[in-house]
Image (cartoon, rainbow, N blue to C red):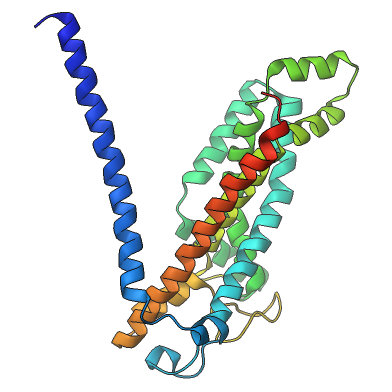
Length: 284
């Protein structure tokens, strides 16, 4: 077999392998969506989306998951805002002050490690910290713990976006006499579409996370009332419903999973739309 023919067969083999992997991933996604829809659509109702869970809900009683939907939105929104306030200065420091240095490499490695830590570890850490300061399971505890989960996602995503800025733009900014603080404004304006994408990605992670809020946010049948009170969330609602021995309640779990899937899908579509619409004026 000639070298040219061998290369042709190698390229065909790896191209087929890549296509097989792609179809496998898409097939798995389609199977998950089909299972959730097929098992949850019959239990879906308007009352389920507009009512809170009532007494005996997990024994087949009446009620819905409105409190869990609202709780997930409260938790994810609060955690994303807190992580953004803490992470944005870190990103600006890495790109406007530290630059390409060993310190920056170490900091990026630290956030990579934090990104890889399982959510249940953050939940255990948050629970321990809450015991130390006397804070019980509450909306505030869940927000603080979820913010720790989202922080490395935001920092590393926004950092990679800022590192895509052409070096010529930074050099021309300094050449015009701008300070490092003024450079951060240029970086913010240039990377704004990517930052919005990072925020939406972190929000999507927070709204679907169960392990981090299992011990820190608690659960309740009521709507979110204050930062010091427990709050429900969709992932935990699904967990409790699936743990029920009643078939009707288990079907509600798949209906709840369908609601959560639609919310995550909407966030993903919003992410792509915002990146396309806001990225028109970005210098590349």
